[in-house]
Length: 159
Picture 1 (cartoon, rainbow, N blue to C red):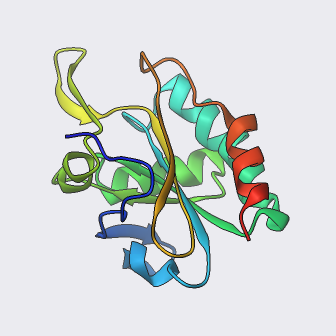
Picture 2 (cartoon, rainbow, N blue to C red):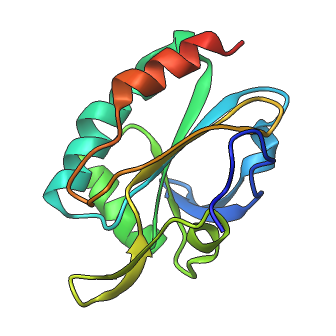
């Protein structure tokens, strides 16, 4: 069942590969401190995803006035994500939903993409400091990007 605006964001802990090794990132650690943007994307090492994570998401991440933490989430392994981060100088943290628990919890599953299997749909979710979902946008097709100008506008309204 799709999540609704105003409901509590499902909490999760996912792996993120850093220069110091694997670390756990728990969504609820942001609650009370930061707004959070979750950018779900199908796969690392694909052209549309590279454009989204390198160019567009980096702009949100670097705009400190928005007071938001931005995470990219895919079903790739954290090791593949890290190689992609290094190759493309991606500035946001990428979280591995390798077991597909978060895409199921957020009902953002793209079934059998390219005949490979289920993956994350391309989507953006904004969660306020209290842990409530205030915006969800799933693109109609994976090659389309979320409306990042709308995301910035929404984030500017949050305190």
